[in-house]
Length: 151
Image 1 (cartoon, helix red, strand yellow):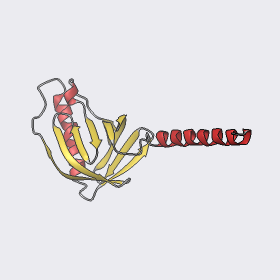
Image 2 (spheres, one colour):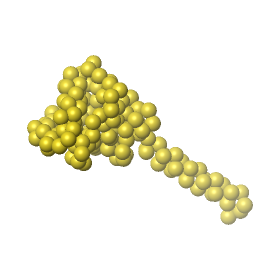
Image 3 (cartoon, rainbow, N blue to C red):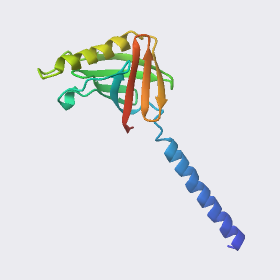
């Protein structure tokens, strides 16, 4: 191979490596709902976190399935997300309540607020992303989440 051919080969390989790097980095964007999200605040008020890991509000979105701990109870649901609007499909929630611990009433109140707001938005929830933050806007209020891990 002559010098021009060698330079061309190096250029093509470098271009391919750069293109793969750009694609890999863009797929890590938090502008996807897929991943594990921590429920941080409701209408600007920080969400109450319980004393146990089970009372920490965590939402896991993956391949159209939502698995969440809303505070004291578990949520299982399907979802549809078009990049702007989130709609829940079917689903169930446990009714276990919180263990009797200091602050459990505040955790339950925080969970009830989440459930009331999402149920009040049957047409869907507007979703916006800002870095590793996700904001849901509904007629009943605004919920903010932070990305814990991407899908």
